[in-house]
Length: 213
Image (cartoon, rainbow, N blue to C red; front, side, top):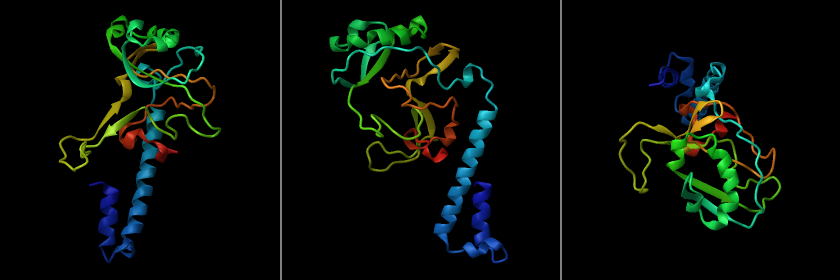
């Protein structure tokens, strides 16, 4: 058990402890514990940032190049599979995006071009102040909890929680990558990125990081 959690629980049951005043105050204990967890999370994140060496293992994202978008036509596809190095595996109506895709492919090893990638295109109008896709502070990945039930009917804990990053990418060197995600937007300064690798233990459900603001 976490040392602070044990101290809070033991103290609230010990009449000789100042924490005994919290006896029976489960809601207050829960609030205190949330503050403890938040402080620990910020401390862990600051430690991770301060120890980054700047090597390939510490690259969270990199700017590949500036690109030009084709004229929008209301296209909306989500994670369409295609062979990375073969334009003919994409529907013809998406071939306008091939120059952008080719720019991304130049950063990958040749053997990656034979693998399957997944293309998402979302062309739409967005209201001022709104997000076109997912908003909020998050990372491109998720934590699979040990007791998550895919069928919604409960289940047993079979494995420890683990971190899964979308695209399973990693930086091989500056400007060279294996796997990962390429992201582009038609509007500048509408997506804020942070060059930090967040410890998996701090990533919430679905990749949520709003608790680190």
